[in-house]
Length: 494
Ligand SMILES: [Zn+2]
Image (cartoon, rainbow, N blue to C red; front, top):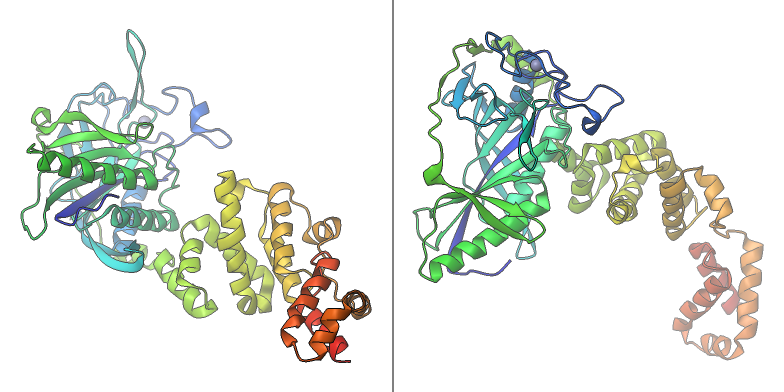
């Protein structure tokens, strides 16, 4: 990001989270593809009924699970839960919205006044900050238009899919903070089990409000809204582009107009979609077809008590219980899949879990994260299982293989599965811990290097490394390093 020392940046995010309930928010239609089928294979308008296609006379009925999921998000984001909250109509016309309005919440949303703590890098240093959560409200998604040359098609499978919109305070001051906030919220909603986290399908996406003002000013500048970004990296890049654009425009005498912009990831820039002057007046009013939502004390208490351990709590526990670094604990708690894998590996290690947790973490946050990035796949799409990591870590601990050997073995298991013991055998990764074999190898190296041997014996002790290195090379890197060191010392002084 270009440096702009005279300017201050103000960012707020609105995150749309698709809830992973079985059925839609106001009807009994499935909100996903049936088991064994992908969303792409689902035919157009396959998951629809008179309610979600807005047939005359059809009435909405609220899905109780949606309220429960919204409450879970509210408690996890430290919000106050409004016990009496109301749905409103947001009126606008668009072909993917056959009712002519979206049922949303307006002045009386279910959650308000929350916050979360984020961690991010600032000038290369670890920083932390509290970001306010203004509100969380429940709403239905719209359908999808497919534009052909001469006409458009409408697919209403998405219509009435439940969403929560999580609106932050304008508390963020850099793209790094915005990225960290979005990742933290993602970690929370996926850990809560209320969102499947599939960003490619747009099940977790955000709108970013960005403005700039002169440093020291208290009046926010005119903001632009970047719509529908469904990747952490794109959000950061779009915000950086937008900051540079707005500052350059103002410094050259121009004026920022309030508008909606879109991110073009191919061109790496934002472009204008519509200015706010043409924006709608949504004429919100309370939804007459739904009664207000009343949440009693017992229900609220039950939901609150059912919350799982959240990523930030887990992270702190991993650091204190297993002595992991803050960074490694952060990687392990960044996705539920990685967390489950780590904990399952520890379970398999039984009474050794506490002693070996750091080695497990080194492998997961190191080599295995590297493989995930290299192959661009999720852990679950590889052949690697917790058994592999547990077996490899045990073998390292008992000097059966070196830590480099463990990396190689896990790399093979990642691609083709199989048992670690078989991989170690096939790949010849076993460490030589046989005293006789090591002594013989050391004898040969000493015999081949009479000059160095004499020098060592005359007091040049730093030559020890030379002998260890040569023997290690002769054994193809498979010698048990601790044993080798001992034997070399003994032989040279003998
Ligand atoms: Zn329906």
